Image (cartoon, rainbow, N blue to C red; front, side, top):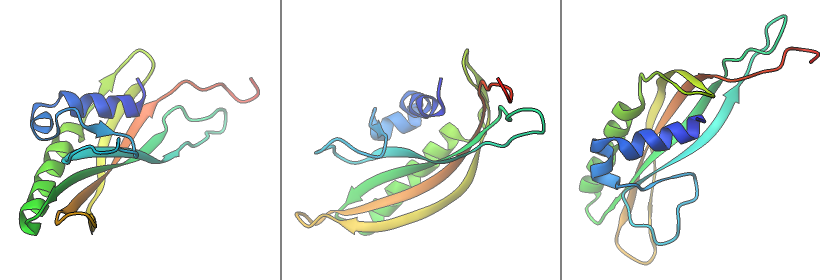
Length: 147
């Protein structure tokens, strides 16, 4: 199971998150006309290091998890984004899981902040977004040097 698949599985099966977004968890591009709230995710980077004898099989991937809400009431929309982000954090932070092809060693919240607000020119809604940067340390298969 890839880290991306794990993120989607954790968020779509978590009761608290599911209550707010249903199954609306997407990679960066959201299908047109998808109503908010929803969650998007994107891998920002993966750090792999080499040891003296072979590549390290324990990369660290950082993901941006964005929690989107909208409201015509700015304070209500902001509070909804904060609440959704907190539920997402609880669903993803500090987990360890083993699968047949990857071992997610652990997850750690690296950063959390408010993303810029935007408005849709066609209505009065204000979009709110809280971003969580999640580090996932996982094991993967590697070939030894020279193989």
